[in-house]
Length: 146
Image (cartoon, rainbow, N blue to C red):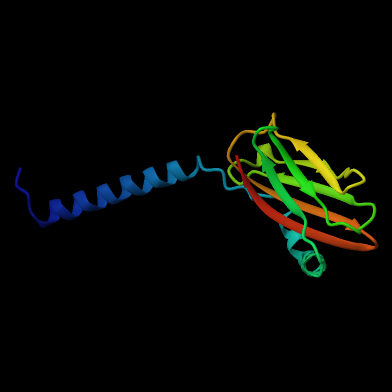
């Protein structure tokens, strides 16, 4: 068999189609879901999120989110003088949305809450705390790696 221009073009197009079919088959196996189910609704509520962040920045003392390795707990220390604190803390795992969970805020009289991490996989977690106190709403987000 003699290799000429016609054979080269036919081989090129055949190879191109095979690669294209391979890419389409591989792309069908990828999870294209959004990180959050109600992504578009969250986008519409973004102005209230900005207001919460401004309220948090106006506090004299910031919410402290720390991980204690010996006790294997995450500590939320709310600023003093806020009074009774209500809200939720969302633990968001960017690599796997099935691991996300929410904890209600139940701070003690000193404004501290300890959250055990024994059921959490080690790695990167984003802690998103939404709370209200004294008639205002607040928001703080931090990253914890353990």
